[in-house]
Amino acid sequence: MTRSQLITQIQEKFPDLERRTVEEAVYLFFNEISSALQKGHRVELRGLGSFCVRQRKERIARNPRSGEKFKIASKKNPFLKLERPSAPC
Image 1 (spheres, one colour):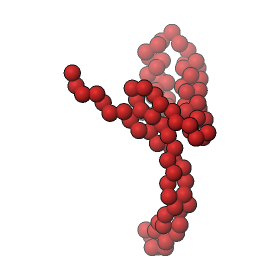
Image 2 (image 1 turned 90 degrees about the horizontal axis):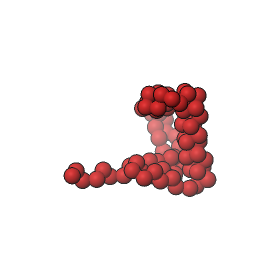
Image 3 (image 1 turned 90 degrees about the vertical axis):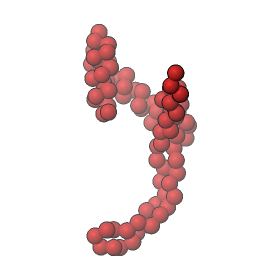
Image 4 (image 1 turned 120 degrees about the horizontal axis):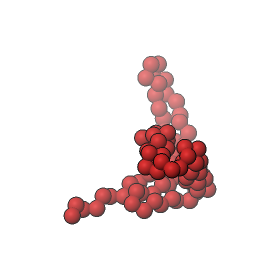
């Protein structure tokens, strides 16, 4: 699902809200998650999962066309760990 699809679904569920208001709320939500992750915090959304930042190690990669090897620097990636669904009733 894309951000615009999310905005459309929220707007369909709450037709009394203006599209601009829904857009601002969705952008604010994602910006807050991004800001927290940049500061090194963990974000937990009950019923969905938790966002955190994982460090990827430096590694050697290969260009498939030329076969040339090169180094990829270590980097940090956002990661979402989904909660396990509860057992069916």
